[in-house]
Length: 295
Image (cartoon, rainbow, N blue to C red; front, side, top):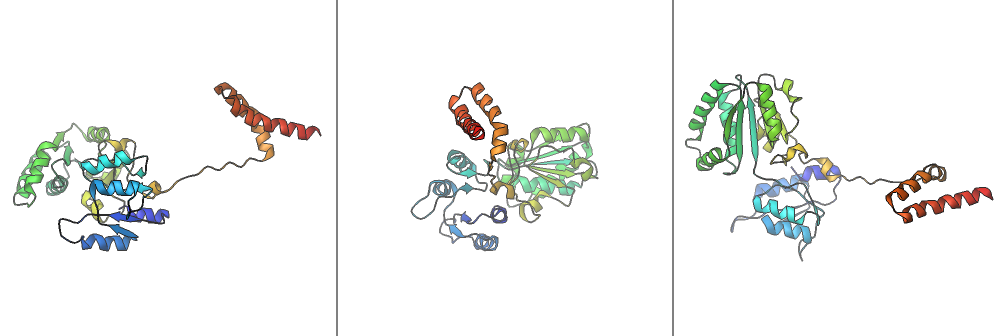
């Protein structure tokens, strides 16, 4: 989700920081994924220590230019603290999903998607917004049945009780308005014709269209990077992509004639700003050009 966009953008070196659990060896699946994604080095460190090491460097870990990837609340605050020393992809809070569903939605799928979100942690937010009272009844029944016996049932219940909710709206236009106001990390359209509504979505980290484009597919395999803005920041930021690893550098190369044409305007602006040195740097050249032309 982070290494491949960097590689596509042409980043020359990509490193990974990942901790091990207790005395267990590093996760072999993570190491295999790092190899496939073209990671150059793996550091056995995680959390706040990893952010500090990558931002400032240590005897064994070189300072980097950009730190990417979500983490817990401590990682988020650490990234915020080092921003400016290095670039970061964003400060990500607890994960969040909104399902917008009409009466055509499958309640089994709706309940399963809410549970998939809620099982992250008690702070995860799973919200259903619908214009169908009947769907609410059936989804609530499905939630009870699917949570029972789930190994993460306690986390799921805590999340749904603390951060989850079901919102009944008058129509789907209002449902879209609710989603745009919240600007969730994930927005799933569980409706008969999701493409007809997609153009009205302005604020979402990622948009998942239809019952067979669940957010879980975005977690793992669907394609786009799943590092997405949270906490309403989708109003002004986007999911991590190749563009986050690209920089632009303006280049100015004026000919003598173009400088002559533009110089007087630059002088006037500098004088209006109260910076005579700026004006003088241009005027000196204009005077030099005028002197050359009179010879």
